[in-house]
Length: 239
Image (cartoon, rainbow, N blue to C red; front, side, top):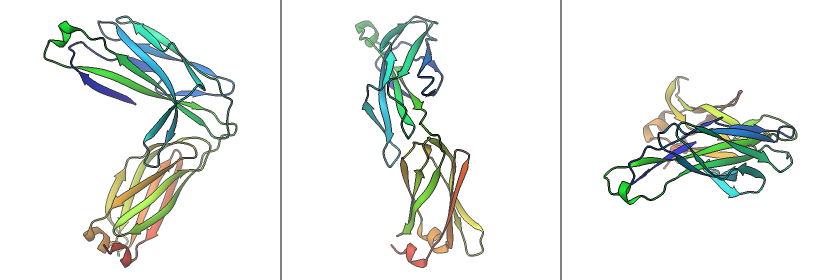
């Protein structure tokens, strides 16, 4: 994940990195991230490792950790050159896949000459996921806690395996009395970490709800399709 921030600065900004994700195991406990400066000026970077969990709404929760080591934590990359960032895990494998993020942030120095210009540049930050293989690898997802009440559909995508999965093609389909689709609504889910749950809500209009006979929820949890169909009673449309 990359984020870009505007600053009162007229210089070029940004860096490139590879790979986009890091996977470590009990055997392969270290890896390298290659950082490249494509600009005509040096780029200064600050690096920090965090333990990564998820809130029920999918927002990342990042906490300080000593389990993942990154080196160096401060570096300068000259124009059109690259540097390697070393990532190593210190903790032992656990029952569930352990998840971390390496945050790489561009550092800008204040320059009166530059700041006097009218203009902005982009200050870049990248968050690279790091996954540590569990003792036993098992994929598993489930749709749970599905309810429609007061024209509001609520459901949970639960990861019941020991590995994260990337949820794709998440869609809610409304089914009418003639068994034909009335509407579709696509949802953005993305990563669901091992042992985590993502809660979703879909508002239904009065017109949609009154014509409904059923709702089908489909989410591809990695290679596993999760499908549930729920009959909709008339009382579910009461405000």
